[in-house]
Image (tube, rainbow, N blue to C red):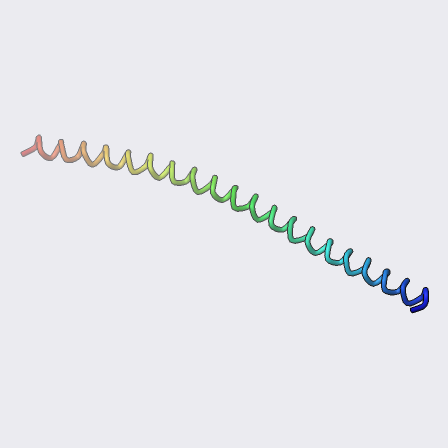
Length: 74
């Protein structure tokens, strides 16, 4: 094996490792972005569920008031 062959093999190995590293880094960035999106969506879902719970409590209160009014009217 002459020096040119060894040089080409080393260059090819370096190129392969650079491409591999870039791919891993890109997947990590995408994964981080997805985790941020999921966290934002989870926070929004939690906020909406809290609002719905408050609205349901209000509906339950009004229903109890209506029930009491109807019972008093009897």
